Length: 174
Image (cartoon, rainbow, N blue to C red; front, side, top):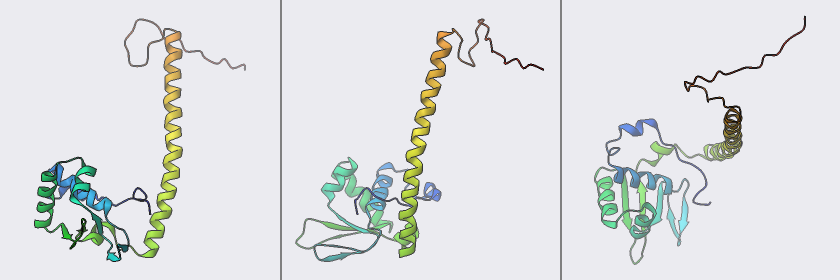
């Protein structure tokens, strides 16, 4: 799976999470949620369970655009509060990061749910793509209307002006 495919759940109650006001810790935690495997995977012959991912401190610092010291501090706070767990692998340059209680954040991850999520993602992608076109067309139409008003010296609605606005009426024969 491409790292940029799919989506995660982020509940509105996240706003009441204890670390929500700390932008560094919040960024690191969301990064961990986004990076975590949604299914068990293998890396260099080792099983990396659902809710975990393989990375390094250096790589994460670059991905987040923050100094390593800030990343270390944020990860330490998340570990101390029981949100994540980090396990440095022996004789290796990588670390396994685990989001504790991943199932509570992202659901059970049954095959049926993953299939439904994949289908939903495809439908949402199509809907979003068509919606973008509609918004673009609407913005284009608004620009055209403004240009026509400028050509006729008609002020845009909402502006006070002494220039009268004439509206053409359709005359119906009786």
